[in-house]
Amino acid sequence: MNKENVFKLFFLIIYNMEPRFRSRSQKRIKTKIPGGNIVLHFRKRKISTAKCAICKNKLAGIARARQKKLKKLPKTKKTVSRIYGGYLCPKCLKHKIKQDYFNLSDITKDV
Ligand SMILES: [Zn+2]
Image (cartoon, rainbow, N blue to C red; front, side, top):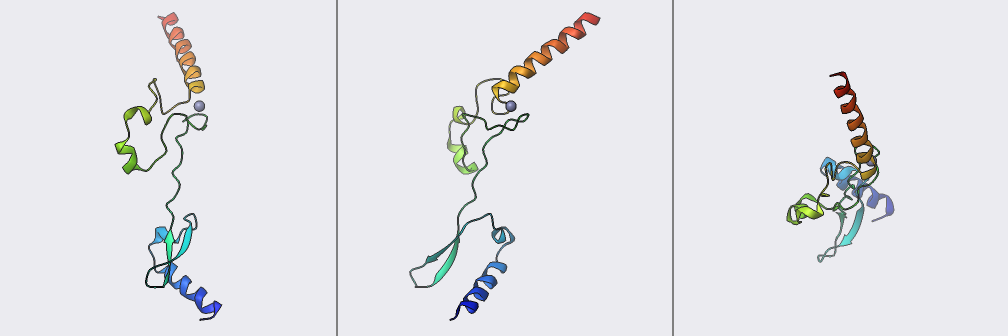
């Protein structure tokens, strides 16, 4: 089989697959199976890290794993024991608490 035919064959294999496999974001690996044929295998996509809802920085202390693995992990590895833990970073939280406090004091002044 020449190079062109090999390319056509892979093209056919890829475009007869499920749409989610056609994406280029998944790494493809050609592996030799015991029968001697070469087949395409796909690496799993990387899981994104937890990010702060305001500044979009990475959050520390939160596990990065698939849902199946996350279910087995203890709660302490999935959240941070602080209000808005696992949702806001400490800097943004500090700012938010200050803002909320001053807003509250303004309301009480009027009353
Ligand atoms: Zn933040």
